[in-house]
Length: 115
Image 1: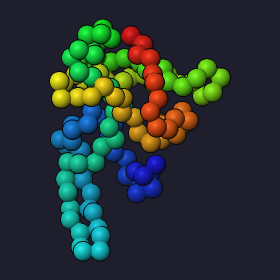
Image 2: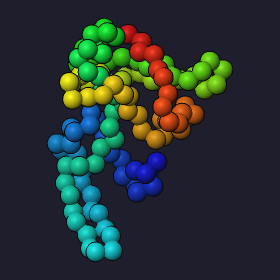
Image 3: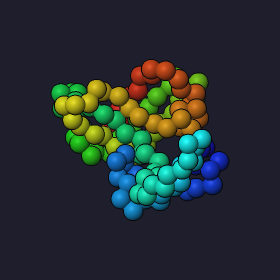
């Protein structure tokens, strides 16, 4: 929604993968700054510890689907979800605001990983 409002079409990529991405000019009350290689829409992804990944039977960079919501109440299956594994992560799924709103989600929600 923000990108559309700003008139830009950023690529969908894994967070942190900004090489070659479009740039933008940020303007504020104290001036402006031009930044390059920065504008993306982050792919939906799950952060897991190595222990949690082993428990769920998934590996780093694996693509899965995740079911969220209640049957009959906007139950949604998100496909193309990237699993990211690190001992620095706390288990959590990251989706953007538009995806969350479309599924009627807010706050902490449980999901089911579908292999």
